[in-house]
Image (cartoon, rainbow, N blue to C red; front, side):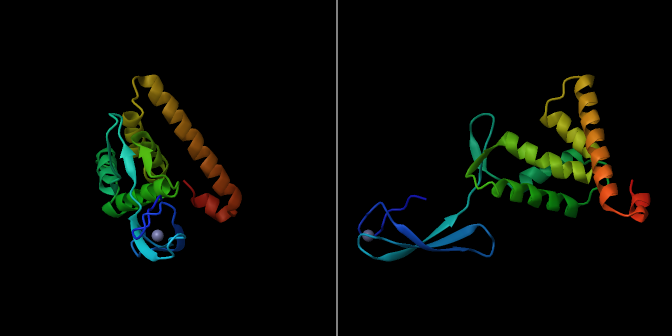
Length: 170
Ligand SMILES: [Zn+2]
């Protein structure tokens, strides 16, 4: 981040120490100005902006992710804890990319994989809305992809487990 020296306004300052706060989001940086030699501390919050299709942006909200997914989970055996876990995974996934902003489409995509692992029916509901399924072909293709994914998952877990655990696999 571009930071002026608060003492002499020199635009070029050097980071000498970086610490992340307990909540993971507040970043304290100790900086030094090479011109006047003074030191100061800045606190940055690693804000993540979501750019909506309209072009407007808003701060990333885990609650918004969860409420979007909750609609797709109606009537499914998914508890609040699982939804919270999913929200955390999505946020970690997006933040791990180290970007200051992401498209709302990226957020949707980041939801798909953990939701697929959580519940296949909820996943299909969410994908049909998010990916604008328009006809039966779209559903058929998505189901085909899902089947292939499940098969390759079952296959790879069968390969890495012994005969006993294969028997208990779905
Ligand atoms: Zn200075």
